[in-house]
Image 1 (cartoon, helix red, strand yellow):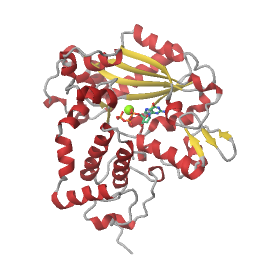
Image 2: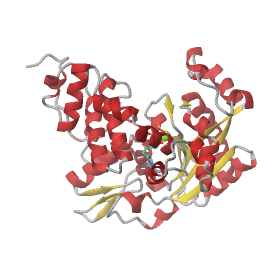
Image 3: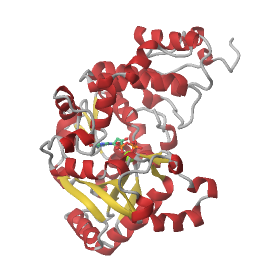
Image 4: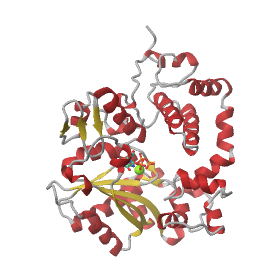
Length: 389
Ligand code: DGT
Ligand code: MG
């Protein structure tokens, strides 16, 4: 028997949704490298390769201690030859040449800068890169045609690059709650995404909204955005019907009420005074500092203007789908992906943020809680704080 501190001693399950993955782990020196390669594969439109590196990184996040030698990896799943080569080099030399040259490459840096603009995906960024453009400034300089989202993305680029803190997310929660309750008393609001998993910073703030009386949530989103707009709290918003299911969930046929699922991509105008005020009451002094003090001043200094731009996603779900929506919007993205893969490959079921369909029984499985969904899937319940796959 191996000593318990040995990573190879534990039985590592191969799907991320079968494992507990905490936020803080022992192998960032390896996972960050693998995630650079994953990101790069994504920039090159190679999804399979991107997911393979991400799965490898995720396995290392679930280990109870730091990897010291290749021997530690002997019994681990999801580590392909390429990932192993990279890990070996880092263990032996302290860094991987492939990772470092990728990180430094003009293409990687430009793609990172361009896809970092709100409203810009890999396809668009790649086209711009091949036209010689490298940064948001290049887009402005050359007078590129931008849609409304991209215009906002460029306009608020500096603010949106800064991580959103938990205190900022809490201030926005208060605002969203006030907006929602003003237009629909009794509605329920839940903070989703990374913040629900316990992250201290995020790239945006995600909310899920519902009402216990099914049907009351219909037409809610425009009322919320109108209220916010009247208060001058929105810099940008676009509400869309949720098209996620058609795009990503394959054979699951939506139940009839599916088309009520709405999503609003927005940019909030957040008063920095409100954040300062809240942090005085809720966080110890060191948490108030966001590390921005040493940064180059951005073009539009939020300290001076008194506000900053923050990306906020709002989703409205009918009550009957709330458990599925909660599970689907908590993430991480890899955890979600693995849940769906598990459902399909191991259980002959189809999982989405709306429903769970059992292809053997030919029926939709109802659930009121996340726990019930894990149970249907034959999985041990993993709490949000351990879904950081
Ligand atoms: P962040 O914001 O970068 O700190 O990290 P997350 O985990 O909050 O990531 P985010 O905000 O992109 O997405 C939140 C979760 O919602 C994510 O973990 C998976 C899920 N999600 C994202 N986009 C979609 C979508 O279009 N449809 C559905 N159903 N879920 C989505
Ligand atoms: Mg998020």
